[in-house]
Image 1: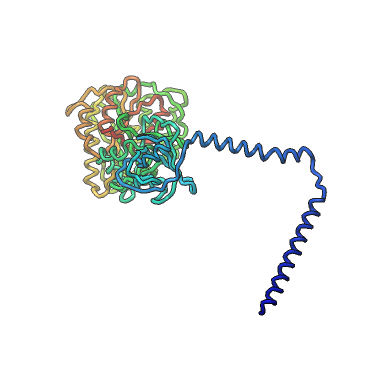
Image 2: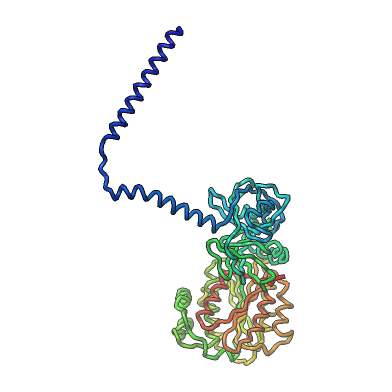
Length: 493
């Protein structure tokens, strides 16, 4: 193409563009000339509202920013052994008004993932970074090189007076995980001490291949409320399996001394428990007659309440379907296990679901009620009952060493231990149970004469809890809870 032809073509294109511009301009002028009818009030509203909204939005943003304080965008780096602290460059910590021990919160702006840690200003930490433990990052779903918004936490920590840790096995069984915590109590406390926790908090303890959850606290934590674990201010704490049914054998020790015939236990809120037992044994005359004595608001004998609680415990245990062994030992002047007829005509001093000739819990209930009618002695030999329980556990271990099931001992009494041969019950509890990591003792007191300090000392020796039941409803609820969960109480080292 010649230069002239190119010039001619360019002129034509320019002309076409100019014509199109003129057409658009004319169209706009025509549109502008057309009158638009609009109510005056609506017109004013359109003029005024945006300005108000902008002013209000800016005010809200300013207020929120003031409440939250300054914030920084920092990139996550990881380092082991920080024990719940997060390292921040000294200069940047000053910008956040965060000092040693201040709580900082960090949030992923994309996912909303949120967490907290104790701040530690550090001159060697690079600008633009926040350094945390890998387990803390993993716990809140973040990773190295994630950019998070970091600010000083403005809320107040709750003063935690009680805490229950849920233990989740990442390899092996839940029983092994629980026993691992019990065996390494000092290391566990060292790992957890001074950490900031919140609702749904979880942390991996890589050394034991377990996840540590906050199962519950007192007071409870909700939303973005936080608490700081401080073992020096806690007397004890509890550990339990996290959302896992841990099979465990059980031994119920029931006081049947004469004081247990006192009729002062108020029947209250027991309808669900009555129905639970009826479904399994309503056809047994003795059991039916036994249940008829429990009328709302009336008082029954202490021993009747104890037997009812034992029956409910058994219903729960057998219903779990794990083949857990259950022994019932009544004690007054002596301690006597109930014996059960097994398939093949063999008698054993415990009930084994699936292997007994009994038709179920209803038949077991008949045996317990029959023993109730033989209350005669005025003495309370708790020591022998605890020794008998220990002997039972030893038998179970020999019979099925490969099962490795932990055991729960539940001792119920209303009075004072006034008889023993090997030593008083607290000494027996320490002698036989303190070093057992796979056994827990719970004690339950009923009646006004119960020796709470002795019962609590026995529970402490067995890493368990003492509970005082004020009425039958409370007693049944506690036994039902014990049948479901293996909870171990640990004293702070």
